[in-house]
Length: 148
Image (cartoon, rainbow, N blue to C red; front, side, top):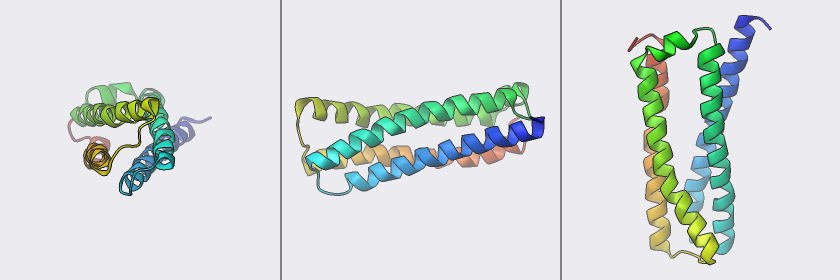
């Protein structure tokens, strides 16, 4: 495989994973916007598991891309926008821990939350969505050498 083809493959994989991650987050937001019930809670648990797996996959694919892609690790390691992007992703991950833990607790207890508890969960997810929207902006700046 040529370096250009490898770079295109890695970029495509990374982007598909990121778009999938965002789609799952928005599916979770849709489910938290309706009245809670046991079925919805099961769906949320499955989506949250997918969200976690996609998050890890995004990180792995992103770092593989940074190391083996066309620009190479030295470009990314020295770019402030890259580290800002990674920092925002970590913050999003930390925010996502709160809904994950809550969903696990509800499932283990066999509890269906009330509407107020579901709204609280949704606020955490809205925070994730707001911050995740910054990541493409940072990626654009990074790709153009801003912060290098």
